[in-house]
Figure (cartoon, rainbow, N blue to C red):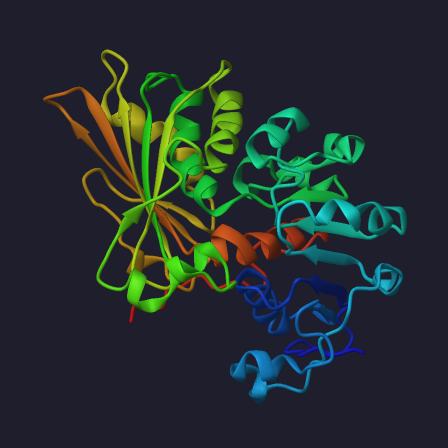
Length: 357
């Protein structure tokens, strides 16, 4: 089965891809992005729950495209692909990734299975045994703006989590430059309901979520450990922080308000200089001091917007960061990683402008 939608010339070399877990929200977003990617051929769309059905029967928006039939997972059939995206629940990717790598396929995994330096940390926070520690050692954490050269050289990318992307990008340069205290960092983040996945849960139903907001995973959310791991690399010492996620009554988007303590004598110009590491980045945009981003600024795009303001009275730096959780927080970042792996311009096939309305 082959379906691809070319807007480039026929002689363009196409990257043969597959999406495993194509009917979850992140998986569907991947299918949508790959279907319009000028150098990607979408060879297989795989869904255990809807195998045998057309993608358009699950998502009506696909009626405008040639029919895509959802398949059962057969790892041997994926050996023809250049890149396979695994958008599966945590713990499931480990069972199929070894065979794909053995067949010479590059893998971009959207679960948490290969994100950790130490599998014991994964096992502690995910309450699951890790069966592939050797592969885990080879995986590269796929936050493109921070690990670009390593991503280009690997065969397996661990696509970062959505909350982690929103938190790490604004904090990493400040900790690396020694501008903020390593202690007492608080990340207060709010996400749209798609961040909870597509499976039926009473707590995520319309009447439960609409006109309400609630905190969840307080002190226990898995992304805490992922954020701490990457920020510890930036600081050169162990970082422990408070991370509290909240559920917003919107479909998509994450906005994080981050509270930090400035080190003595740090000026606004030093903060701006630290953030200049993103000045040439396509998808990370740091706003002028005092200008703060909104969800509307990023919805539907692969962008991360970062704003900040110094609280002179308390000696704190307040940072506001936002992304679209399904794009820069999942599928868009995965495609960005594919572009790096395959030597394409990093922004190929990715939306740069948000849907304001």
